[in-house]
Image 1 (cartoon, rainbow, N blue to C red):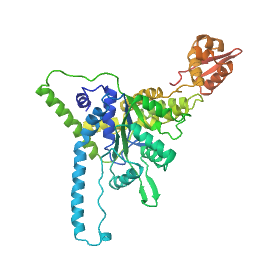
Image 2 (image 1 turned 30 degrees about the vertical axis):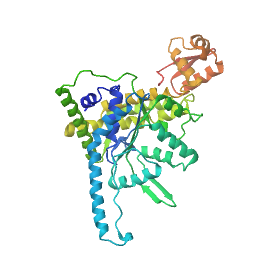
Image 3 (image 1 turned 90 degrees about the horizontal axis):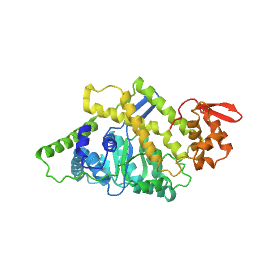
Image 4 (image 1 turned 45 degrees about the vertical axis):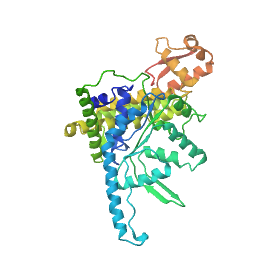
Length: 433
C-alpha cells in the first residue's frame, strides 16, 4: 500500500507524511458506520478523520486530492450512481401504475460516498439515508476556508446549526432538528470524514479571527492540519517508458483495490492491546498536564485535550491498513507500533498548527519553561539566574511572575523548592512539551 501511494504521488511536492495521511483520510471515509477504535472499556471513537492540507495556492493540493482520495474511490462512486439509476427506473415504473400521487412509494434517495457541495440542511437530509443503510460519507472541500467561513457566518447571522452539526459529526453522533417547512430530520448515528485544502495565511487569519482565541467549541481542535513542503513539482523531460506506465497503472489499481476492500469491511470495534494502551495513556497524560497549565492559551489547551481522539483514530486507521494488506494474517488488536506512529504524527501536526496561533505561548508558560530548563542544574534556578539567562521578554518580567511560575511547576510535580531565600527551584523530571 505504501509503495503504491509513493508511486502515485511521485511527481507531487508531498512528503511521506502528507501523502499517507491524504490516502488514510480517504480510506476512513469509506468505513461503515460502527467502525470504531477503543482504548478502554468506556472510551471509543469512530475511525474517521477531519484533515486539511495546508499549502500556498498552486502547490498541487488538488492533484494530491484527486490521486489519493478521489481516484481510489472512483469505482465505488460509479457503482453507487448506477445502483441509484436502477432504483429510479424501477420507482418510475411503479409510479406509472399508481394514479394517485399520495399512494406512490417514496422516491429512492442516493447514498453518496463523496459529497463536495452542501449546507447544514441538505447534509442532514443526506445523512438520514446513510444512517438507514449504515453507510459512511467523505466530505471534500477544495477550499476549506469556504466551509469554515460559511459556518462562522451561520453562527453569527443564521440558524447556528452548521457548527454544532460539524462538531457532532466528528464524534459520530446523531442529529435531530425540526423546521416548519422541512419537518423532522433525524439520524441516530453517522460516520463522516472530511478532507479539505487551505492556504497558510488564510488558516492563520481564521484561527486568530475570534480575538479571544479560546476555541470554546473545539472547532479547531477537531482538525488535523498538515503543512505541504514548499518545493517544486518533479518534472520529467524524457518520455515515460512502457514499464513506468505499467507501474503507475498498477499502483492506481492497487489503491483502488484497497479502497474497495475498505468499503466492504463490516463494522467492528478495534481494541488496543495492553502494551499499546499503556503507551497511549502515558502519552496523553503528558498532554493533559500541559493543557491544564494556567499559562497555556485556551485554543492550544483545546487542541491538546483532543490529541487522544486524533491519535486513537489514526492508530485505528493504520491498523485497518494492515487488515486490508494482510487479511487474516493481520493482528486482531491495534498494536504498539500503530499507536507510537499515530502519537508521533499527532505531536508533529500539533506543533505545526500551534505556529498558526499568534499567541501560542503566554508570558507565564514561556517563563515556566525557562525556569524549569534552568532548574535542571545542581544549584537550581533563582530569579536572578533566570533573568541573567533569559531574553528580553524574560528580563522585562517581575519577580512576582517568577514566584508564580515556580509555584505552578511545583503544583504540577515537575520540581520542588530547595530554598526559600532566595527562592530557588530544582527540576525533578522533564516538562511535557
